[in-house]
Length: 325
Image (cartoon, rainbow, N blue to C red; front, side):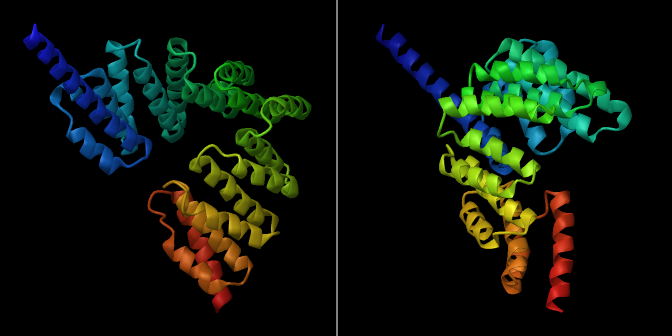
């Protein structure tokens, strides 16, 4: 009996150790650190790698390395064997929507259909899958009807999201109304949301983005201050602070306030946002005629993974060079 108990304890310890290793890979992927993710994955046991969780991680590694077509084919095959696995369906949908963005006009519609099918299967299997719901809402709001975009579907998924994350649900419902030119309904749903969640960074950020779209700069700035104040984590706070800086750039006003916000954002911004924060700082220092500082920030911008930013930085360098004579 004692020997059997010891064996069970050892088995449990092995299971926990393996689970922790898999968690290491997942955490590195969430942080978009593909080198650390690959190293952690390489350290997994053969059993872990061959488990369904390990197979999903294999596909996710393809995605972070931007081997999107291989990832799509991989998850499509994996779905044939694991059609009821939530993660398999979700990441098949993720790879499909990325392929839809990259593909030729002749292939876009096919990938869009694959995306909808996989993501709808995901929320059928797991109705509270918030990432899938948010992705479906964004797709249905932004994709043309020929590709399957449908604002009524977006509203349906937003209301479903509201059941599991009320603040985000109010935010997404308001977004649907704003993007379908129903501003009064958007204001009504936002008022209802603020009544229930008066200190919601999410709701302040959502209203700020609508104000930015309307070029209501002062209202946007006010909302962004509260969005940063009530942000639930550094990622959300850095985005609110970044938008404060962007408002200063776009409006041509309150450059000093924008610089202060971006300076606060810089140490807490994630890898994706940090180069953009630095770029906006350079723009505002040029506005303030602090050209040496602007040049220092331009020199720090990492454009290696963002072609859009690379083009903008080239133009900003030319502008700075002209100003410095």
